[in-house]
Amino acid sequence: MNDIQITPELILFCGLAGIAALASLGVVLFQNAVRSALCLVLNFFVLAILYFTLNAQMLGITQIVVYTGAIMVLFLFVIMLLNLGSARLLEEKWDIKKPLGAVFGIALATLIGSQMLPGFLSRTHVNPLSDYGTPQALGRTIFTEYAVPFECISVLLLVGIVGSILLAKRKI
Image 1: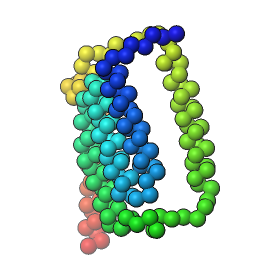
Image 2 (image 1 turned 60 degrees about the vertical axis):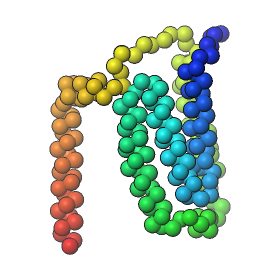
Image 3 (image 1 turned 135 degrees about the vertical axis):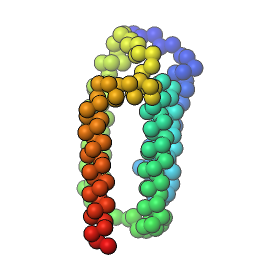
């Protein structure tokens, strides 16, 4: 059996993982849509901190800027625009979606757990590169190995922006 060393990093990771799990439960279990969205913001921040503790700074920065900053502002704007503050609007009659969702959730958790268990039981330890997850390593990889796909995506996004502008001007 593996001897697990209790280190401050492990305690920090377990604490943050527990907070993330409770926040994700709050997203699903709260009746108020604004409270659910705020739990999602907390979950995004805790995940960003977890990424920073794993030396994946670029992923942590992206988590904060893109998800917590942009997407959650959009979610809260839609919630306020639709006035989903009262639970009366969200009440539904019984349908098959909830039990079916629970069955699929348990099946997915079982599948993920069965794929992760052999990795936890093995005694091998992989040391990542020293600059893995940093913005410098990501930039070096994007602009050397993946330069052509990166430029293709840039052109595709530019075409999408121009197309949406042309469609918007046509309707005015």
